[in-house]
Length: 104
Image (cartoon, rainbow, N blue to C red):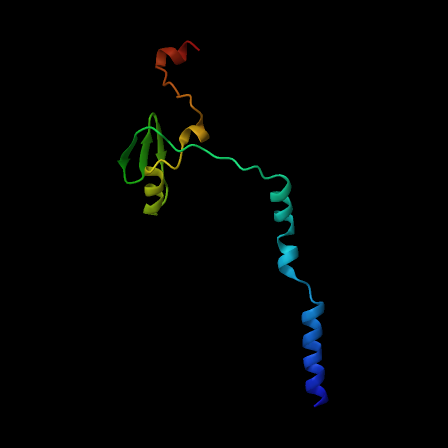
């Protein structure tokens, strides 16, 4: 009887005086979000999106290649949620001819 009581008492004490790992585990992330996080919103892509093949989409003059077998990614990008102007900028790259490159 004494052994059983001691075991129950020890289990209770370990539970009461043990560390709460959840509170400590995410404390740094909570502080970062409280102090440094700034909510931003981005516009979705407004132009025409052309599907070139299974894994390539064309946004105006920019081509997005999706290196995944997950078809849901293509669906997400096809709806315009991804805006390539945010990542790559609004400027389009001009392809130079060989003569133009030699003159540089």
